[in-house]
Image 1: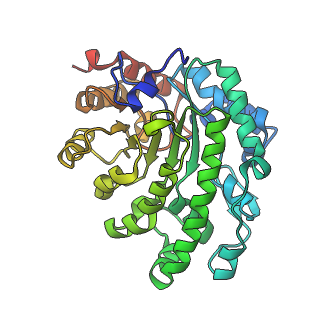
Image 2: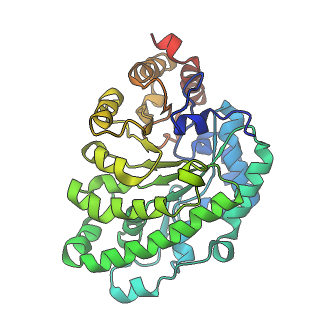
Length: 354
C-alpha cells in the first residue's frame, strides 16, 4: 500500500528504478522549521510531545522529498523509562544525574512497558503514519544495547574514549552483560511497540560499538544486537519489517555485523562502499543490502563537490540492495542547498554516475 516503496524493496534486495535516499541523524534539525520548534521547546520536550515529534519527523521529507521518513526521537528515551532521570538537556544530548557503574544501580533498572512508560513514542508513530498517508515508509529507531549501556556508564565521554565502559568490560564483564541484557529486553519491547504502532522499517543505531575490538564486539555488542533483531515482530522470515543496523567505525567488524540478522548494514563514511560489498560477497553475505555512505561533512562543501561524491558512491554500489544515505549524522550547519543537491544527485541515479 506504500506508494513509494523503494526503501522497502531495496532492504529486501529487490529491483528498484534507482537507489532510495534518506538521511540519518535527525536531518530536519538544520531546517528553519525545526528551529522554530526549538524556540518554544527543548529537544527532550519535542521528543516527548507526540505532535511536536511528528512534525519534526515530517520536516525532512516535506523539505527534500526523500524516500522515507525517520521517527524523530532521542536514543535515551527508553533509558529514562528504565528509571534514569535526566539532569541536563543541551542542544544535542541528554545527560543523566549519575552514571550507572555498580551492581545495585544495574539491578534497580526496570524493563519498562513502552505503552505505559513511553506512550508518546507510539503516539508519534501513529501520527506520522497518518500524516504520511502511505506516501513513503516510516522508519522507527532505537539505540543498540552496547551504545545505550555506554550512555549510562559514561559521563560526557567523547568519541573513542569509553574508559568507564571498558573498565567494567574488563573488570566486571558479568555486570556489563547483566546491564546489556536488561537494555536488550527493553529495546525489544520498545521497537516492537513502534512496529505495532505502524513503523515499516526499523534502524538500530549501535554507533559506539565500533570502538570495540572484533572479539569484544562479538561478545558485548553483536550478541545483543542479534537478540534484539531475532525477537522483533517482523513477519514470516523477517520479510514484514526490515531491520537496518548502523555502527560507526565498522570497518574492522563488517563481517561480524553481517551475522546480526539485519536486512541492511549501514556503513560509515570511512569505508569504501565497493570494497565493503566485495568483502560481504566473499564472506557469503551477498543477500544483505547496504546503506550509505557519503561523508556527512561533504555537505559543508559545494553542491558540485558533493554531487561528485554521490556519483562515486553510486558507481561502487551494487545493482540491487543499495540505499543512498550519509555515512553518519548530518552536520547541523549543512546548507539547505547542499542537502538538496545531495538528494537530487542521488535521485539522478546510476545513469548520471556512469
